[in-house]
Length: 302
Image (cartoon, rainbow, N blue to C red):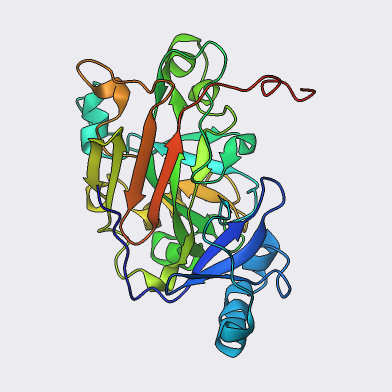
């Protein structure tokens, strides 16, 4: 599927460089600019301290003086590793139905992904040892910009700094067949790829009307729209803030439309060598190859 972006977006936040050593930058009119000499990182302190306003002023004053980032440099996730990644399950009617749920959730279904699963949008996807049912989920994600607790729905969007795309990778056998909660199948390394960039809240006219899609080896798997979400972005922020304090830099992933591998009549789980592509209107596209682990990659010691 063709990647769709909105040409009137003025500034997109990116982070670039090798894993663990990413630097902050911006993408404007197709140009990637390095802002690391002025800003340390796009982290919780940046969002909480008025960093977005300062960044806009920096771009306005020094746009042409900032060094460019080469197009072939790796993009990492557009914000530094968050304190927590909160996910919403079964938030699209067709996804709930493909999982055999005849009625929609009366309240949001929440689960967490380990922050060690966090990675860049185009990083290779390496299945965990023993993986048999590797699945994909394209999701609209939001980044919290201020400390938020017990907030009312009508005020909730003021806590959102911006939006990005998250690939909620799942190992369904780990999730469904090993007892306990979903987190087992949601938290392996690389199971939360985010990006390619973060678009600020004010630059999206209607977050409730964004198309999102997934292709596997060029075949369409998911095709949905955020208008079909059971619970809106504002409601989710308000609801989640009743149960935990949301902090600057935290990520909320808002659920996926139908078309996941597990929901197919003949499940099409990801296999080694597959090419996984996904995108959201205005938020960019990502492409990940599924590959086997290299020698020593499965252990920290190597």
